Image (cartoon, rainbow over the protein chains, first blue to last red):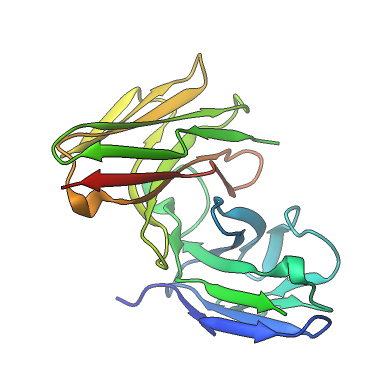
Amino acid sequence: GAGVSQTPSNKVTEKGKYVELRCDPISGHTALYWYRQSLGQGPEFLIYFQGTGAADDSGLPNDRFFAVRPEGSVSTLKIQRTERGDSAVYLCASSPGVGYGVYNEQFFGPGTRLTVL
Amino acid sequence: GENVEQHPSTLSVQEGDSAVIKCTYSDSASNYFPWYKQELGKRPQLIIDIRSNVGEKKDQRIAVTLNKTAKHFSLHITETQPEDSAVYFCAARTFNAGNMLTFGGGTRLMVKP
């Protein structure tokens, strides 16, 4: 079946602009995660959704970052007034649910490479 | 919150040799430890994982060991092949405090033919 997909694959924007990054999780997966990966580092958690609600947004760096998942499937990460320091690969992951079961592996998308000039 | 340290940051081995990557974590409540392989420009892919009620798990050439008392876990790759070359990330997840993964800094493994 189809894996997690993300669009666009690359996004170049100017400092101060607004951007939206989209994530399509695996069909039926109720949990969705956003991570940010800077060059040469491991992914860092931003926010996760269980269904439509943000269950934990403690990783969002500031109030310029916001994410939604209105119908419990597709999610959009929104960044206002972009800064050069926002440049990174933004990864989305989904899992069937949350909990201790073996089926809760997180499957990652290919990421969106954001470059802020 | 959880903190995961990973070392070495780079590892070069000859084809056929073994490779070992080590991670430590800080939160004793963490109970699930996956390992991801990421090739250049690609998505992270799960290669093996282990839960806190298990001390060791093996899948063909790869194995993971967990020492809960010392709060460290390791990835072992035997009979390395050039296609094993990639960046490997360990991670820890605490189910009772959120479901996010906290990743280590990564290890770049280079297998020389």
